[in-house]
Amino acid sequence: MRLKIDHTTVYRFDTPVVYGLQQLRKTPKSSYNQSVITWETDILGGRKEVTFEDHHHNTTELISFDPNVTELSVSSSGEVEITDNVGVLGSHHGMTPLWLYTMATPRTDFGPGTRAMVKGMDTKPGIPELHDLSEHIRSRVPYTLGASAPDWSAEDAIEAGQGVCQDHTHIMIACARALELPARYASGYLMLNETTTQDAMHAWAEVHVDDLGWVGFDVSNGVSPDTRYVRVATGLDYSDAAPISGTRIGGVNEELHVSIQVVQQ
Image (cartoon, rainbow, N blue to C red; front, side):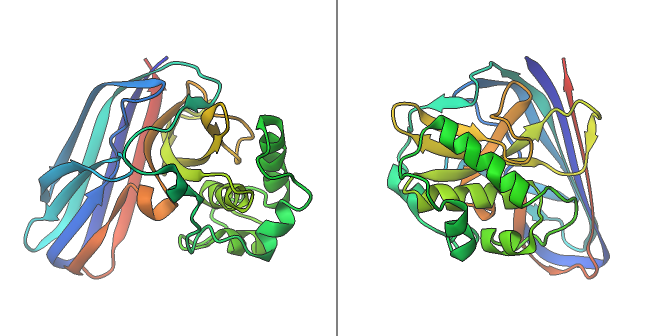
């Protein structure tokens, strides 16, 4: 399946930005089951300083704000060809060691809530057991739009009993690591059946399973990623895969508008 994606992010400020830098992770990867046909990023109110690949193999663009701007617009668009692999990506490759993905982070530390989620499970579970775990997380922490804060950890979402895809992903990662399995955060685009316009990227977990390699689990939708999913960035948690992150001086009262369209070609 070929998907066309348009992703625009607009920042507006009441006062001018004196200085600012942003890292963009909005460019899909040509790897595993997907091939990027075209992709380009346009910037208004700033400029691209450099493009590089980080240690998670994410295409990262560093952009700077133009002096004293009150609006920054970043528009990315392109087409990606996806083949169905029933969620199985295959073996780990690259210079980043696999053991790195067994390390807990502040967002994925496995505390009492996580340990209760995996109680009774064998270490090194197989695919059926991991799908059961995904369903257990979704039933214990129902998807609730706008229910969580951006800096919530897996334990925060479990304690609250509600969350969004970012929270589900952090919980699944924390549970997998508690079971001694490497796991990573994946962000990207998802073509929805009910609408073509969205206001946020999607997130899911990838767990490394013996004899299969990396396997994706979208807890929020109860499935493994298929041809509707476009992988963009991966990391230990959201902070490694955030579509935009950075810092600035000035720019009081930020207003953010995000528009994403994903359609089949």
